[in-house]
Length: 422
Image (cartoon, rainbow, N blue to C red; front, side, top):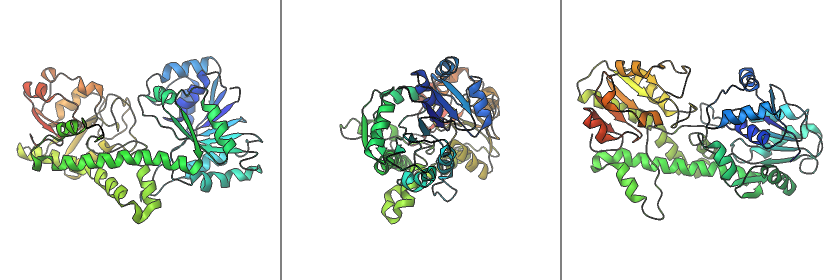
């Protein structure tokens, strides 16, 4: 692969993708509208957390294969990996995709390839990108090739999955898809499947919506657990011994840049035909309030008024520093609406990004009347409760990440989301 690549968007997907190509001998120029992010990359400093990223970034920059700035440069391939969030009314905000596409128009030339990696509603390539790209004066599909190849990775394991996961490539023409496949074969060992752009867009949104619906099912069961007099985590484990059953797990809500966002794309497009998807989104969005109310109930049961809640975990999932759409922040909002004071701590978020946050776990332990675990970080799983100098002896585990027997042996009153034994 001798073509040069310009990656627009240097966040949780764009930067690892740029680094992977650079580590395989491809000249890559990264672009981001955030000057601080560009500066940090130039200085080999990370602005995001990901296993193995620092070493790969060092290699890419030191060997001269990765540069970065706030503006695109003339290249052979352009990869757009920018956010595709939702608006306050849950409709898709595709302005980042449009602006990123518009930014490369002055640089594209005959024979170039443009790839969208962002997860987007079906028809985004056709309705948002192509109207911008035609302004180049090039004929789409014969002079300028365009495709969608959505990322399919999980934070914390991005590099492993970039290499080994199968990849979907949807081209606006057959040659667009074939050129994209050839490009990703630079490092992808999984199978690369070719289709059209709209199908590829739908596939990625389907994948995340499947998980959201499954989690909503688990959350409904968790809410029923006390009435059923069961531990839903145990019940799910037994159900999943069935060879054709894979029930996901409940929690305080669903977060991240994909599962909490992408189903809304289908709700917006499908309307009345997306009822199950819509209900699942509402179910999962109800969990932060449910978690806060459960916390209040535990405090009331113990006769504690005017309490301070220790919220442990601000990231949307364990062992990452990603707070995008994190349910933890919504749980905190709901707790505060109930009149409770909150102090939060997350060992992976090194700078205070929330008004309740402290960098000292000990400080949080000493202030809290109840310890609520909202993210299953390794650091929390490995806590020895017998050694904790904590004000409270009440713990509420919303992720099933703590050993109940060990905590109860250490004298803690233990509560678990979705467990009748509370």
